[in-house]
Image (tube, rainbow, N blue to C red):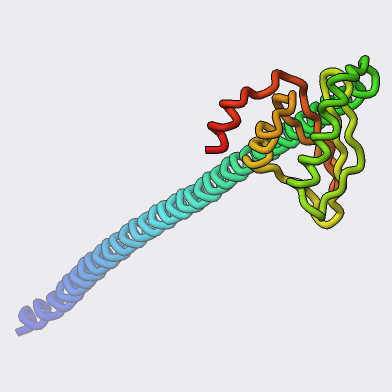
Length: 227
């Protein structure tokens, strides 16, 4: 009986030790599991952080690329505008130069005509006078002009030298005096010894005519023109 009681008392420490061992193992296992979970959680968090960082870096690169694309587009647009502006400026410069050249050509032509008529006028004043030609030309020319030009035009001067006749006309009601085919036809009918007429109309309301001496038109030519 005493032996049984001792055996029971001996079992109590053994059971306690076993329980302590089991508790230790259980706690150890739980701790390992917790550490494993924490490790996995830390790993996942690290992976998430790395992914977030990678995503952020990619987004920054994309944003930088987009910004560069916009900058290049603005630069290209600016270059295109500059090229277009330069082309337009070049066209305007060419047009301006063309206008200047045209105006220069017109001025040169006008100056050349003025010098030409000044020389003709000086020639009438200085060349030796052919009295016979003057006598047979000045009076018929006055009559022809008075008949053809009408009342609004007055004869201020008719002077013939030896190669040219100068006729000065006044027409204040009309800035310019225009000639027509009938004028040359009338000259032919009058059988005047002139071949061509030049008009100096540099002044408004006044015109100077220069008749160049030449062979008298043949009668048959005058009749053909009349028909």
